[in-house]
Amino acid sequence: MASPLPAQESEVRHAAVERMIEHDLRGRGIRDQRVLDAMRRVPRARFVPPELAARAYEDRPLPIGHGQTISQPYVVAWMTESLQLRGDEKVLEIGTGSGYQAAVLAELGVQVYSIEIVEALALRARQLLNTLPYANVFLRTGDGYRGWPEAAPFDAILLTAAPGRIPQPLRDQLAVGGRMVLPLGEQDDRGQTMLRILRTQDGFTEQRLGSVRFVPMTGEVQTSP
Ligand code: SAH
Image (tube, rainbow, N blue to C red):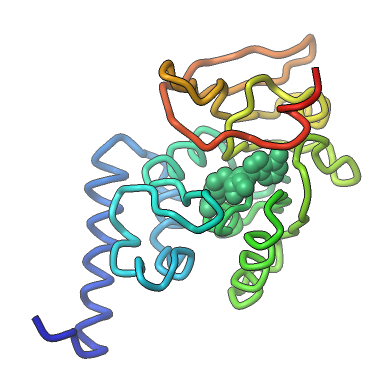
């Protein structure tokens, strides 16, 4: 088949985005209209390697280099919805990766603080996000284990890589009333559990949201006792 003309190309992309929104997100239970609108607006094709751009709106994770992946759209929507955001909060993300999840959060209007441990990915995400009109995204290169103390407390914290246990500094940086959503568990046959931790006046409560498979959180969480 001949490659589409530019006008057809944008129609093809429009159709792919609508299919993602209606079939893969709303169709699988995403209800928060603001999350659906944010995901309609973020150009996911720009966050995947150019040779995979045609597949950007398929509901699957894609490789972004350095052994890492951009999560599938459904999982991004599900985690974002699970944070229960209104749009005026401060949110910490551990694992910037491609920057896609950070862009979806930025579209919701929240202040986004995101940390990436792989320098090359952090650099690429920074360059890409600089070309998009988000003034509310702050990026840092390094190990997210210690969080971002100067910007704490956070109303929501999101981990997009799975630790074997929850880093204490991240618990400490969660505001009372705040939510932390993370895939917890080692990368083994039993997989990982998506958890939502709520911080209350007296401590923390935990909800299991489902089974997932994420790349491991690296750095201090793997080496400290
Ligand atoms: N949110 C990303 C998904 C990236 S996959 C996106 O939308 O594309 C998880 C990312 O977490 C990877 O880029 C990985 O390098 C990063 N990561 C793993 N351990 C980390 C740590 N300790 N601190 C910060 N980032 C980490």
